[in-house]
Image 1 (cartoon, rainbow, N blue to C red):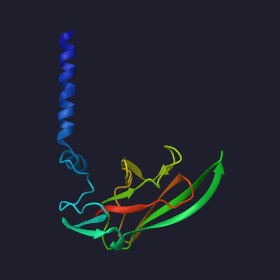
Image 2: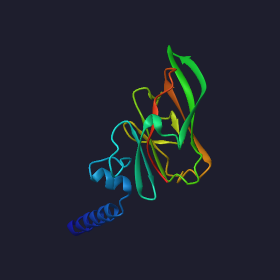
Image 3: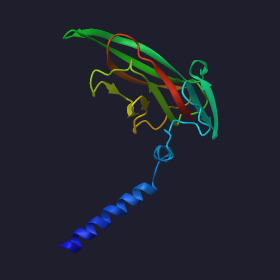
Image 4: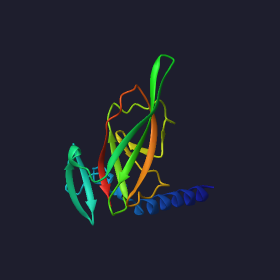
Length: 165
């Protein structure tokens, strides 16, 4: 019996080791103590990291216009004394390159109604959204729409933190 448990534990350790060896850019970045949306040159807070052909350029959030977000308020209503608002946000890629990775930051204004109130995006950490696994990229001259329902009626603050072509 002990040998079966030992073999099983060795199997689990092997699986864990192999999985660790197959780490993604996200895991590598986290292991280095920085999030995956940080530029190698570390743009810092109020900046968008733009990576193309392995070259990193940092832009102020307000000055980055190559790829942009378009908000559309779908509806607003009151339920049990609380106001909720549904938004669609379209990521517009007018460039000649496919977007391979995009990370969008948010702050306290992005207060979801509940855990099922975000679709076509995933939260990877507090304050960061990214494409779901089924959406590998956003093609050149295309767009991608995600939606959510928040508490309140104020449009939330969303910024592109990192984009890789």
